[in-house]
Length: 301
Image (cartoon, rainbow, N blue to C red; front, side, top):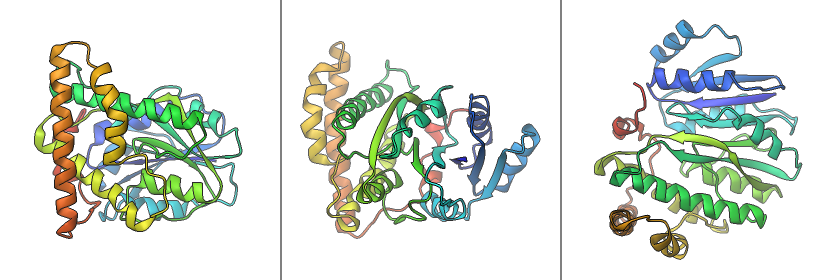
């Protein structure tokens, strides 16, 4: 059985598209799709537009994405390690070969987690769009390298999958795309990068949303130092410096893009300093964040 969990937040049209694109894929195994959303009206919208019994709805209690995912992982737990759970969001959509490429990676029994490849749908011709392309290209380069070397790396919360029957829950005060792969790694499983399984993402288009999203992400990753101090870190300030210098000069195609890349360097420095300052003030990672920064990342609603 393949369980596809789509976590959404009051974006019915985007979520409908996300569901339809999974239903349209050539999936030979039995599968079901569970949409997790805290708004009952999303359930009603989906019921109006979908008449497929393979699609179900889970009313998110509203305590954050990690809380809802823990409830679902426990509910869907299977003793069969060949069963797969795919995790994605309602405000993104996947390529038509995504499930096929993910399942192909799981043919290796040593693989416990598989991550897809985020692709920005924002225009490269404006600063925030360019920043999204720059950062995703850097992540892609690092994941290809670490996957080839069979080393640990963190997954993408936009699209990743795990074997069922291994974990029932994870610490909710850390990013799920980091702590879940680590829990599998500790049990001897490896991580794979399915780079042909693409997930298309609308990124923040203004300073306020960009800062809110990135600071929350940093706080979630910095919590790993407390929760899992022995976890190999692939997302950190020092790793960004180590891997980012080459991209700073190699990725821009013209003077304008190079100027934006310099601005991105200082913007990343600012958000790390702000996140560390907040953490010292005990302003910890909080998972109930989506309503505060969703506007500029909305695709359809």
